[in-house]
Length: 155
Image 1 (cartoon, helix red, strand yellow):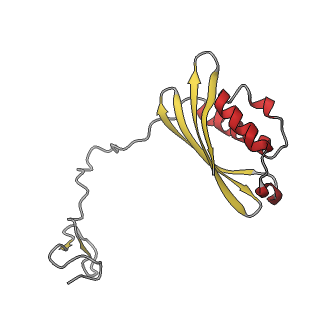
Image 2: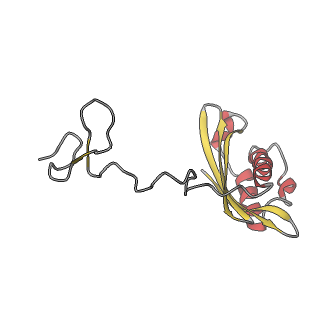
Image 3: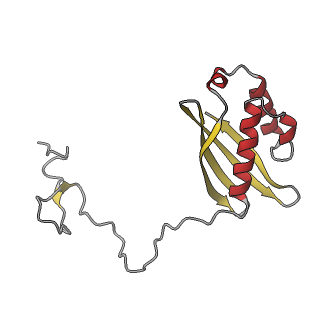
């Protein structure tokens, strides 16, 4: 027999740490996280973003979107894109894209996650008219060239 939560009666337990006066919730676990909570600092703290990665990503994202909208020449991206990514963006900029008719791409949200001290995984959403699209990339900081987009995926 299954309970209202979808668990068999023999697997459901009553949460022991319950403080409210309402009826006990039935779950397949004890209700504790396994962490003592006394350290005052979470063990899941985020890595700090590599210096300059967020500024570089926002700038290069805007440049890429302008090229995809055919408002900027792909030549303006040579200093921020790796050769393979540059080729991809050039091909996308000359391809037939029916979403261009929705209007210019506008950045909505951006996110930067540190992958290593010299690299970050980045993503963003952008809007064209009423529709929202996504773009993701990997950026790497090289000693001689600074930050560069080394992988790009437009959805």
